[in-house]
Image (cartoon, rainbow, N blue to C red; front, side, top):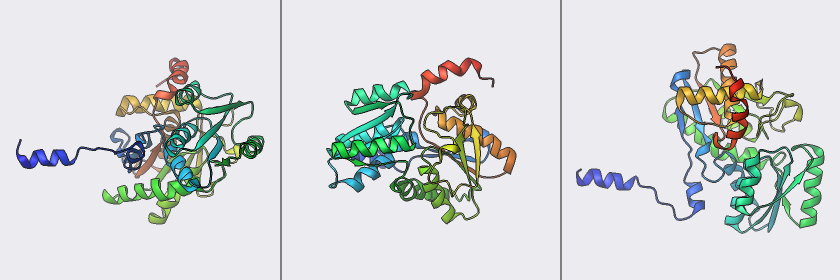
Length: 308
């Protein structure tokens, strides 16, 4: 190896001086082509290092906007946002309380316990008026700031400024003009923020939302009936059930070797519907919010019932 080659290799070694430095310099997250699906590109948000999910971005943006204003913060979550918020609270010296619905994936409570995070279980489903009311009451009692990921415009703003603009730059770097953007709907923050950035640069793009079927449950996703706040930007919605989301996870793993979470599996299931509706000879861009490892228990219960 020549000195020049050795020097070039050393320059590519990444060293981080804190976990916050690691998080901020982990962006942009990768954009990868899914070759077996066609001209399809996926943004891999499980490369965020704290919660291994897209929620690192919102949690960081919320905390940095509240820094110096609040010693305590509180919010309701069913998973990744609570993990990200709890970690960042420790890094910034802010006390965090998480409200969880009782029907939450087992991993959430386990990880929060590992972190030593404070959480409160309730019998109230996430993202409804009773949960919002309870959050406000507890925020007053604890003298805390309620970050309110379901209603606070800082949520889509974080994705517009960071995730969306990153994606635009990545697409321009490879000279791609996307026709269709597909993303899951939970709070609706990331589909709104990223969709807005894409529409500003590519005005003809269609924004496709993926919602959980009303009679089903997919962690991190919501049915349209739940009234996500920021879906005005969405041009079309496909409703996906848990079984098809699991099938999407398995299909992607076997075709591309990517191990993604259930909302990402729902996005893959919606991709097939979109291709049948809008055409296969188009450029598709997807977002994969997290990876598979948190959902192994749920997938194991269903995998024998999934036909591929």
